[in-house]
Image 1 (tube, rainbow over the protein chains, first blue to last red):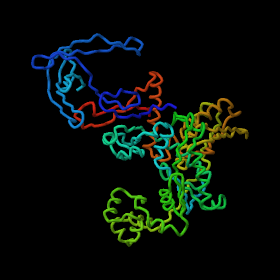
Image 2 (image 1 turned 180 degrees about the horizontal axis):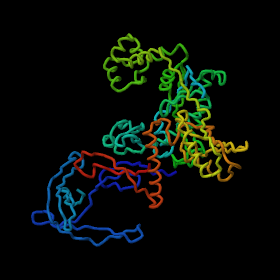
Image 3 (image 1 turned 60 degrees about the vertical axis):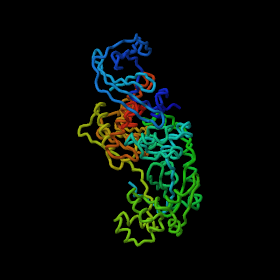
Image 4 (image 1 turned 180 degrees about the vertical axis):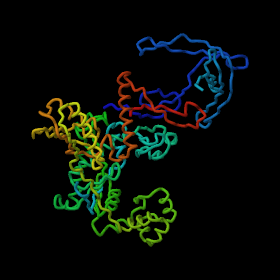
Length: 118
Length: 430
């Protein structure tokens, strides 16, 4: 008997692989490569795109695209959950070449950069 | 229409958390997991919670965010109220075979009138044994009866875990309190004359109280029905008004509300006379549809689906025509009822021009997909209609893309500073 109605468990963090029958977080951050200037501010972002192969099912990765940062917007920092898995992020809102507006953040614990939608 | 049937003695059938039980029956893997059903009217809150979830502190009415904070492994399930209602309507119909007086109170709780049953089945113990067998048979599932209905795309055969509790006594309240005190699978009988003593030691939570009244009674130190009944009636009325009088009388065993049955409607019909006899089949088909709609609008039909429908025609020169259809899926939808009649009209038309055309509903079944047993108002009917349309669209998308692509957006921690924690998607299959 198949039943695919909405049933799910809520996993912690991004380590939980998304499954059809799970709750899926919206706006999960995606890893990006960020080129920085001497002050550590982002000047270019390397994006990995995907393209349809034609039958609507398979996808293949496009070559990465380097987009320069046209404008640096608001910056803020979040420190949270110090009592279990500390979270420290430095957010910056950027306008990319071509007009795309995204939010980047640097994980201050691992040094990795991530991208999220505003 | 027959008069309203009542019974002063009642047997209460109670299946606690019926929606959860039905989900667990449908998906046995959920039994060992902390399960919670979302509120059908507010998808951000919980409706029913399974004992495993309760053990972790999860309670009905909590938001999803609160519940997940308490129990990260909580399994959330979207409710399927149409399915619950249909299954419960079948239980009510099955109990109708035991006694002609059956009153559904809420999902999972129904009263069976037992006046006169002693001549059929014997003393209350025997009556309850018959009711228990009926409930258990219903719980085992019914092969094929639910297949193909618009309301459910699941097979209908799945056994329910034995969780029914039965109570017997004079009046609905005593029988309900007895059922609430019975262990799963057992029954408690309160003989006439023992009601007050039985009630005196029961907690006030068995009363139909709103949270505010419950809190006020607790603050007054009234925790048992006996303590409440020991106070003067007028003192309770002074504090709680008219509702207080009813509470006091229930607690004191002064009220024995009878079970009020829902008599099945008698034959419902509608007819049209043609001043000039007509033979045009298209016109006859349209008239049939209009007559079906007129008969459906009868207030006696509310809460019942039509199972058997008959069309009759008086032809010129004294001849007649008649056809009768038993609907595979009882319905309250004009199109679904009229369609088989129109087909018969095409296949075996009247042999002459029609002077009078009549439609009659001959048999009914309780509870409906279109008009729920517990949702008879227009808004609920509209919701059911939207749900059907959504279900059809979702099914089409799933068939085309081989996976569900529709999701609900639910608030998880909308206050979180981390954007990915605020909202989540849950598969949407109405």
